[in-house]
Length: 238
Image (tube, rainbow, N blue to C red; front, side, top):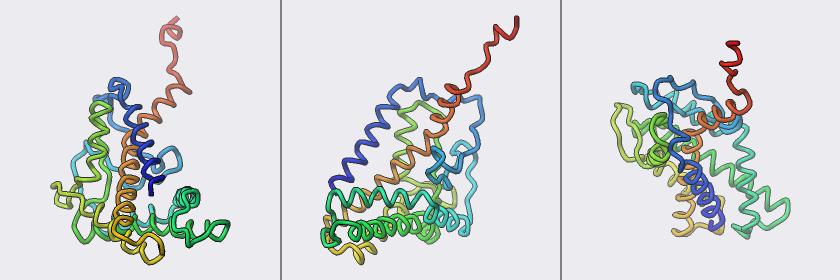
């Protein structure tokens, strides 16, 4: 698991450094936020993002389960699982799997199982049972660093169906349940230390995903301005 912590740490450190310039990512308050893209960077599923500046409206159980299902069986998940499986292979985790194609296939199926079960638990099953909202609510306004802090905090605090706020039991309990289930197919990492590491990796990955969801519209607008600069007003008035 040491390799996974290094990867997540690099991602979060990069995000923090990239957002250090508050003025560059200050959201313009007068403009209404654009409709959320269903894919971050055109690839990563973005089915559970909502605008946090709008009045809160709860979602029914079937919507929670739909979000969980889409995030669990969308095609980019297979590429993500393949990437994690490659990391597992390089780090020789669960050595009883072996190496080569057979070992990688076992790691690939295990990595996919981790994500699929984790998504279903944290976005569908637990939010339904605990009456919590599985969506990520974009902060939209404020400085880059304040939005980063609030984005990361949503891994700890979430909305309830009644509109209140509570500890994010669905995130931590759902991922803990997924980790417990994974002991059935991870023969070499079943002790308490390994399980705690897997839980922290799962929640850290979700935290990084929330940061991507928060700032993707800013990144998209930045590239759109670079590739489609506004017309020169002074030149057009001549």
